[in-house]
Structures are given as structure tokens and as C-alpha cells.
Image 1 (tube, rainbow, N blue to C red):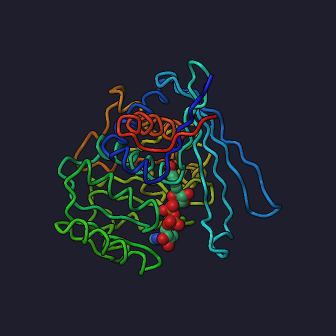
Image 2 (image 1 turned 135 degrees about the vertical axis):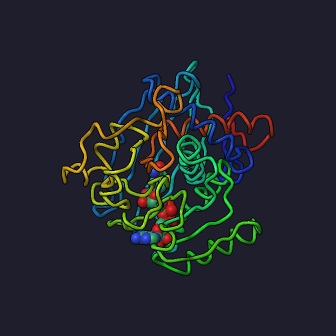
Image 3 (image 1 turned 90 degrees about the horizontal axis):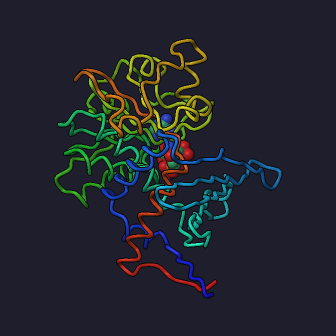
Length: 329
Ligand SMILES: NC(=O)c1ccc[n+]([C@@H]2O[C@H](COP(=O)([O-])OP(=O)(O)OC[C@H]3O[C@@H](n4cnc5c(N)ncnc54)[C@H](O)[C@@H]3O)[C@@H](O)[C@H]2O)c1
């Protein structure tokens, strides 16, 4: 029997899936992760070319979606010197009910969308309702979808941007001002950003904290996105210690990111400091913010459930909108 496979490019995905829909997909994804309904295998890494190059494989099964997927990512840090991106990614999706291949999606756009959407969900669940000032630490690929997601859930009218490469911060500020004239966006110092922010997203590749704990306003909500290895840290350990801590996955956050591992090793926190997974808050099983002046911190390292939930929603919408290319297998 003839089988059709759908290919969705980055542009197809952008057209098929709005940020609001991506945030709803993350709500469902994290609820399935925290309830144990989803099956997620540990990330497998293969080292390539005898250097720092590697390939990562992330398998996931979501019974509620009746779909199984694997995201394949290659990371060649020296690629930019050859005029190529450092990261390439594809997501392959199969129908779990009959085992047939369904679709292949561009993994870079999907990743940026689902990563922004996770911060959007956490912000919706944890930030003050009236929070309107956003600070972005890092003005790279992920910063764009962080802004999109946060403005989807809160009435953002000011964006303060910090990047060690000031030109990148200025470029993003211009981009935001030209698309959203009512939003005051500017490149500022780390201290100015931290002191005014009601919501912070850190999306850097930093190995040391990107702001000082003493600069923060009471009641700020922080989404920590960049740190995913023990030697990477964006958030000061003192901030983690005094914040109400929420994570995407307890298991991964206790093993991978310096943001959690460093305060654990310093004895500033123990495992019980994690108040909840975001999926437990989304399901209404654990309360989010308890007081207006509490600092809330959502640590995200990224999970395969996000890729599959976003892919499934994009595939559904692409069918209705007739987006993408079909090939016969
Ligand atoms: N949690 C997740 O699900 C998830 C998903 C995708 C990417 N990430 C991670 O997020 C991070 C950012 O990814 P990206 O694709 O935007 O990278 P990118 O390289 O496009 O942007 C990172 C930016 O951070 C800036 N920067 C580095 N150190 C800084 C500092 N101390 N202060 C301010 N700015 C600083 C860099 O100049 C750069 O502009 C990476 O570590 C990546 O692995 C996480």
C-alpha cells in the first residue's frame, strides 16, 4: 500500500503553529511528562570526527498523541568558521497505532518555538499577572522566541536586552521596536536589566552568572534556559537558594545544568528545594507562586516531550492549512 510522508520546513512550522498553540502543546506535554504517561528515553550522545563534534538522539512516545518520535541533533562547534550553522536538527514522527512513518520536521525552528513556549507556559503559571517589563539575557536564536512567548502571556511594554556582544543586543532591540512600536526595547547593562525586570529569560551560553542576586527586584519570575551542562551557569546560586524552584524534569535538572548542580554541590540547596515540575503546576497538583514578593525560578533543560507535542500540533494544523510537502515512500 502507498504510504505518504509529510515534510515540514521551518517556514511551514512557523505558519502552522502559533505561539499560543505551542504554549498549549507544552501544557499537555509537561502534564504527560510529570504524570508518567509519557515515555522518554535518556538522550544518547555519539562523539563524531574525534573532536568536540557530536550527534544527539532524543526518543519519546506520547500515548495521548498516539505518536512516537526521535529528534536528531548534530553539533559541530567549528562549523561557523566554514560558513555553516553549528547545530542542525530533524524530528522524525511515527504513528504509534500502526507504526507508519508520518512526518519529518525541521528541528531548529521547532526547537526554538517549543523552548520559547515552555518559558511562556511557566511565565503564565508563575509570574505576576501585571508583569510588563521583560529582561532578555542573550540576544541569539532562542531570545526571539522567548520574547514572542512572554508577550503572548503577559502585557509586555518594555524589553531590556543584555548580550556580551552589544551589537547583537542592539539588533534585537531594533527588530522588536520595528515590529512592535508600542514596546520600548533597548540594549542595557546587566545591572539595569536585572534591577527593573519583572520577568527575566536567560538564553546565553554563559559559564558564570549573568547578573548578581542583589540586583533583582522582589517578585521577579525567572526562566533559566541556557545552562544544560554542569559547567554552565546563568543564575547566581544565592538566587536559586532563595527562589521557589520549578523545573521541566526533576531527573534531568538534578543531573545536567550547573544552575542547579552548583548550588547543590555548595550545600546551599538540597533535592527537596525543587518545589515542583512545571507539569505538576499545570495539572493543578502543586501551587505555583505563593506570595507577590516571592522570586520564582523555572529551570528548563529541554525535553523530548516538547518536541513531539509541538510536532504533533504542527502536523495537525499543516493538514488543515495544506502546508508542507508530501513524498511517497
Ligand atoms: N532549555 C532548552 O530547552 C534549550 C533549547 C535550545 C537551546 N538551549 C540553550 O540556550 C542557549 C542559547 O541558545 P541560542 O540558540 O540562543 O544560542 P546563540 O548562540 O544564538 O545565543 C547565545 C547568546 O548569548 C550571548 N552570551 C553569552 N554569554 C553571555 C553573558 N554572560 N551575558 C549575556 N549574553 C551572553 C552570546 O553573545 C549570544 O548572543 C544555549 O546554551 C542552548 O544550548 C536550551
